[in-house]
Every structure is written in structure tokens, then in C-alpha cells.
Image (cartoon, one colour):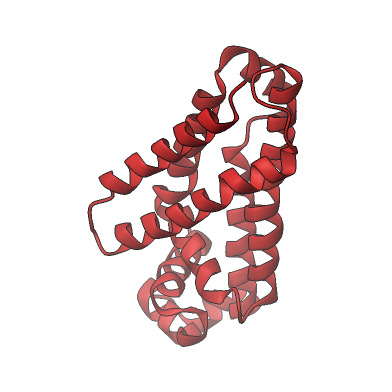
Length: 200
């Protein structure tokens, strides 16, 4: 691992456990084992490190969504419930259980009320992209006659917001090394319950 990546890895770990404002440049360089001048060769300041971390999260978050060109094939190949289950699995794999992405998401939750960029990413990328994607997919399911003709955006919100809350609880349990099996079962039960209520 090169020096820049070591700085980022250490910063992600410290920010996710202590909060951005509680960590100093000296804290970071002390853990990495470098001089402060070496850090400033790679990053302008601590804010630059944080923004780089946020950009990394944005790139990683895109991985939970299939390419637009695959949407039609997915709808043909999968039942609505299987589609929602796959979404849960994708989020677990790429965010909640991913060592780096789960820690960055904790930074976003910690910093959302003190850092404008954290709020923007949560609102636009996490909430906005997820709801927008589901709105499109529910609309296509309605057109295909797989679910009842209801407002797609409302369906997206009604389904996804409980999922957001459960995944936040999931990450809290994981942070404390507590069992998540019951909560995981509830996530899949939520998907089944939701589709049962809107199935044609």
C-alpha cells in the first residue's frame, strides 16, 4: 500500500471512530508513521483528505445499482421479490459489510449536521439515487403488469425508507460486534411483505 492510501486508510479509521473534528493531522501522521510534511505532499489539508474519502464513497456507492442497459433484462429474469432481495444483498456486499465503505458511511452519519458535503452525499447519492432507481424499476414493473398501478415514487419511498433505517441499525450492531441475524431476516421479510401488498 502506498503512502497516500495509508493516509486515507488511517484517516477513514480514525474519522469513523472519533469524528472528523476530534482527529488532528498529528494523530493521522502518528499512526501512519510519517512526517506532517509527507502528508502535505499528498493532501492540501485535513479537509482535502475528508473530501477525497467522500469521493471514494460516491464511486463505491454506484456499484449497488445495475447498469441502465441491464434493467429490462433484470425485470424479465427476476420476480419483484427476488429483485428487492438482490438489492438488499447488493447493499450488504458493497456498503454495510464492506470494510472501507461501512466506515465511510459512519463518517457521513457522524458529519451530516456539521459538514455540507456529507449532507449532500446522503441526500443526493444515498437517498436520491436509491429512491430514483427504485422509482424507475417500480414503474417498469407496473408497465409489465407485475405489480399494481400505484405511484412509483410513493412505492419507492414506502419500501426504501424502512430499509435505510434497518441498515443503520445493522451497522450499529456490527460496530458493537452484536448478532445481526434477526435484523437480516427482518430485511428480507420486509421485502416479501411489501411485494405481497402490491402484487397484481
